[in-house]
Length: 215
Ligand code: S3P
Image 1 (cartoon, rainbow, N blue to C red):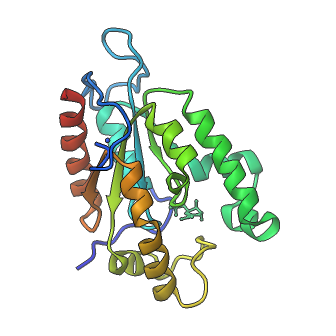
Image 2: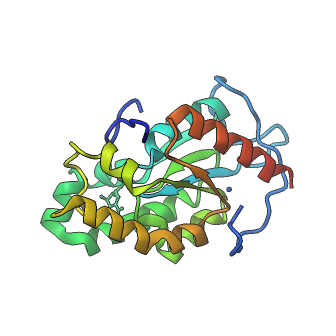
C-alpha cells in the first residue's frame, strides 16, 4: 500500500553505479535540534544534502524532517522560484511557459550551488538536467527518492498544483516517471525507497548519507 504523503507543501548522496561526483570524506554533524549551521566543527563548510525524485516522492516533507535532524537549513527550489516571481508555479507555467520556468529553476540551482549546510528539495524536473545535477552534485550528496507510479497517483490524486500532470493522470505519471528514471539514477549518489512513510524515508537517507560521508 502506498503511504500517504501530504500533497505539496505541508509542514513541511552515492552516485549510483553510473558515478560522477567524488566521494565525500568528511562526517556531518548530527546535531539534532541544535541551530542549523553551515560550518562543521573544523570550520569546513557542511556538505549539502540534495533530494531528487518525481513529484509526490516526498522531497519537501522528508527534506524538512532531514534538515531538522541533521541541523541543516532547508531550501526548496519551487518555493524559491515562487518567492522570486511572486506567483505560484502553476501561474508561471500558465502565463510564461515551461521554458521560462526551467530558466528560473536553473538560476535557483546555480544560486544554491554557492551555499553549504543545506538540505535541498529539488523540483521533480530539476535534476533531470545535467547542468543542475552537476552544479548541485559538486556541493554534496544527492539522494534519489525512488517512488512507484502507484504511490504518486495515490498521493497526488486531489492535487492541482502540478502543471505537468494534465489529461490522463495515470498515463502521464507512468510515462514521465519512466522517461526520467535514467536521469534520476545518473544524478544520484544513492537511492531510497520512497513508497515508505516520510519518517522511514528520512531514516534510510540518514543511514546512507552517513555511510557515504565515511567513505
Ligand atoms: C515539476 C515538479 C514540480 C515543479 C514543477 C515541475 C517536474 O516540483 O517543479 O511543477 O517537472 O516534475 P515537485 O517535484 O516538488 O512537485
